[in-house]
Amino acid sequence: MGLTRVATNVDAQWAFQAMEKVNKRLADVQLRLATGKSINSTEDDPAGYQLARGLERRARGLEVALANVSNAKSILSVAEGGYQNIMDILQLIKEKATQAADQSLNSTQRTALNDQVTALIQEIGDIVSETTFNGDQLIDGNYSGNFQVGEEATNALSVSLESASAASLGISSIDISNASGASAAITSVSAAIDTLAGSVQKVGEYKSRLSFKENTLAVAISNTGAVRSNIEDADMVKEQMELLKFQILQQTSATAFAQANAAPQLVLQLMR
Image (cartoon, one colour):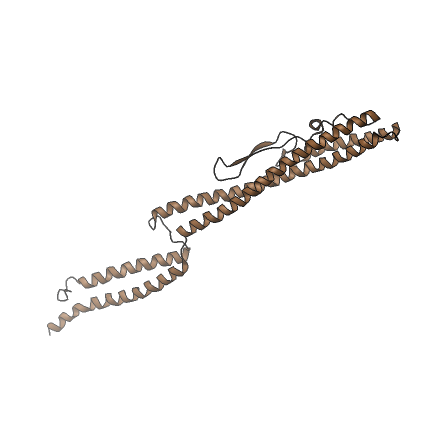
């Protein structure tokens, strides 16, 4: 086209533009192969970029929430351990009270048993004060709050742990140094065991809910990541095929450009 007009080589210009387009497409494919992403800037897919960032926000929030759930379960496990230790002590106190209530014991023996029970009640106080997490006492009746178990502000689990102190269990003043006191202590300790069992049950219910939330979050993280990947991640096999195609086109366009540049030289033949 216009081979006899040498001032402007239109064919070469068209071939050059085609080669530039191929080079641009080839560079885009190489970038996707290098990064593994099909969206490397907003101009690639503005809507896709926005969707991918929203999904990334959700996924990262879910991952933190999953870590929060794990921390919450650890806290509750510490509290449960404290409760269980106190439960063991209560069972032992119940045994001593039952023993002291029997008529076969004398006052000296009951006094010895009472001293042992007093020491055990003091140990309950030590366990309550030593059952902590990050400096917070867990089973003194003052631990409560919300665990953030989701990526939205409303996804919170409210937790309140009951006191396991001797006073709250109603056994701080029991006296088994005599038969009547030992009989009364049996009733008090039995009630304390039931109360503490309810506290441990509550912890178990919290942990059960957290386990379900843990499974839900894990599934949500996987699904969210899969959707984001479909939008943003490059299909490496497809990009490799595209790379081969554009490499061939780059060579053919370069050849066409060289031929278009050489074509006007035919005018020289007319001038001989």
